Length: 85
Image: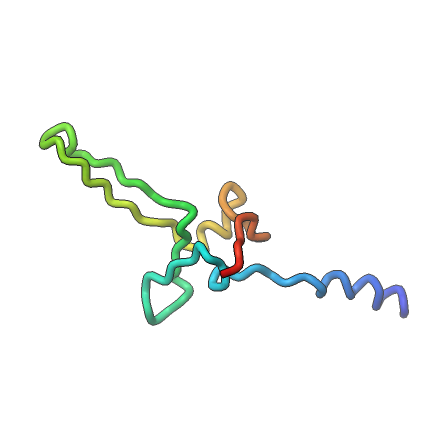
C-alpha cells in the first residue's frame, strides 16, 4: 500500500503548462479562449502580387494553440516552449 502511494505522488506533483498562462498566447476571439493562437509559430502567406506591383504585403497569421500543442515539431503535449506570463 505504501509503495503505491509513493509511486502515485510524482505523477501528480507536476503542473501541466496551459497555453492561456503562456506569454506567447494570443486570444484572437474575446469570447472563447480555446481559439487562441501562439505567437511563436507564424504562418507567413506568400504574396502573389509582389512581382506584379512591387509592394510587399505579407499577411502573417499564427497557428492555433491546439495545433501547436498537438504537434511534436512545435510545442507538443508537454509544452516545450512554454514561458509563464
